[in-house]
Length: 101
Image (cartoon, rainbow, N blue to C red):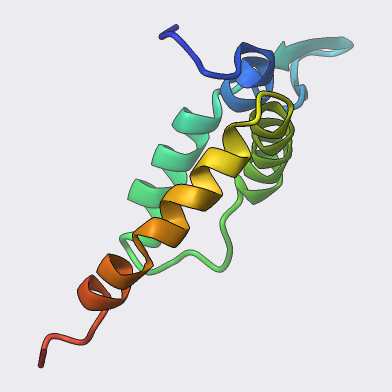
């Protein structure tokens, strides 16, 4: 696991909610899938091939996003991000123009 700005969110980011698979008659096993693995599998197997109807990993991503937003706010980093976005608004507008600049 790499260093994280918000280590308290790693569990949400790296592990999905438990999914139970029937291995034998009454034996269940918890399968904790990494969000990254979930996303890459969805992207490569469904999205790129044009068979995706939705992002199956979206609920897990929303949990992570909520956790990360709280962590950034608790550390005051959300204000720094807001200021950086405001300072670069003109650059964003310039680079988001259609190709016909």
